[in-house]
Length: 148
Image (tube, rainbow, N blue to C red; front, side, top):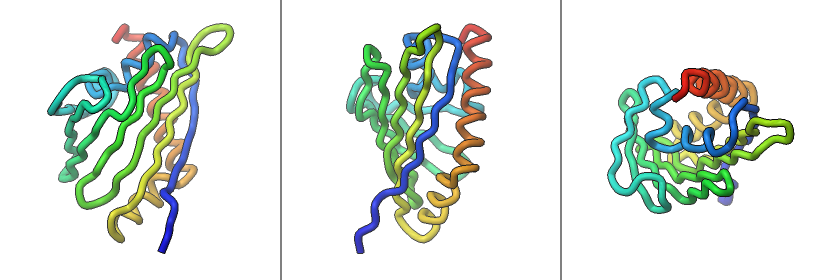
């Protein structure tokens, strides 16, 4: 039975230029603002095909850089949360007239089993996703203010 992947997108504004913001959405850049984010780099850094691993609780996630174009403000990742779900994360940073950056974050996910489908449904629920993205805005803003 065909079922399209689930997706959700949301944007927020940051008071910094895209060249300063986009690096905060890389494997190593997220260490500046994501509590407990400790990526293990397996190959590369930001370039297409680079691979890293993260562990949160008992869940290991493998990430691969699908696209990284700083000149276009774009970073995209494929991810596999072992035994749960897989999909894509796309970040687009665009300059805003008058200053700052509009950051757009899209998650597109597919549950691999009943548990994974339940996770995806909850994670991408509009209010839940909005809370997560607002938390991102708050944390990234604080990192930028601290000069990270």
